Length: 402
Image (cartoon, one colour):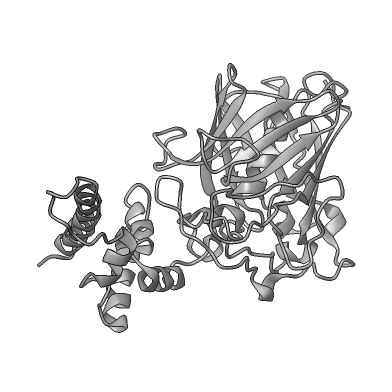
């Protein structure tokens, strides 16, 4: 039997388990003349399946081969599906799948809160819907600037009298703050010159929740105790007055509250979240959610427990004036095709140390490629969630900067 046939057989068996469970429940509801069959839930049936009883050594070998063979989306969904089979499969799968920092891959939703790859960048794109004031982040599946993409995050703009909020969710159809897929927000001041990125979950050990937070409960229908999600500041973004003229680029400054300045140095570490707290967000929304017993953060990388630790500061890379084109230019390496004041590249600021090759490395770049299409490429030490929030700030109207 070929390896792909083996995977197909496993899929068919787990599918039949789910169908059998549904038929069992329907027979029980049919009355006295119906054949009475003991109802077995999908989770219990999966635990009793022959595949769930595989020896740990053999199971690990099978899952390792699946993880290696299904390296990119959409086939990567098979890895997520394996983690949803039963408790033993989930545990081994989570041990095998490496974080984006090392693998350069996004697998589980928690990957969106983890730092990007150290080598290379993750290439994404954003679609804007002007009518509904919503924004959708996708992972690029090919080398093309835009393709079908793998949906990652969604955001909805909410105007208030004194500020504007962008609510960020794992579900493109539910971007409400009361949803269990809500993971954070971006808030601007009235002028649109200062922004704060809030994480709904603690980004590192000892993180302090914002005093002005509103109490909220994740997953109102979950059995486990309710855990309020707070507003944990992870980044402060500011835009300065455009000193290069009306057509010049904006001047950005990003203070990453949750990342130490040493993260951009060789051997430096950024805090890495490993689980969502009690909210069952360990799978992408298209797969049934898993439940986590606790929120854990890699203790080896929790470097901001000491509040005196210097924070990472990012600034936009200065453009050069192109005499022939008569405009300010940046080298986006073919990833940006339309001139826009929204385009930017972020590098580590000189405040973090003397200028060197490492600090010239672009950590996040964002640019326009169509009327409502934008590319977003990011790398270590920031995450997809932080990158998306920073890019959302570029969409907001800057009354004092334009």
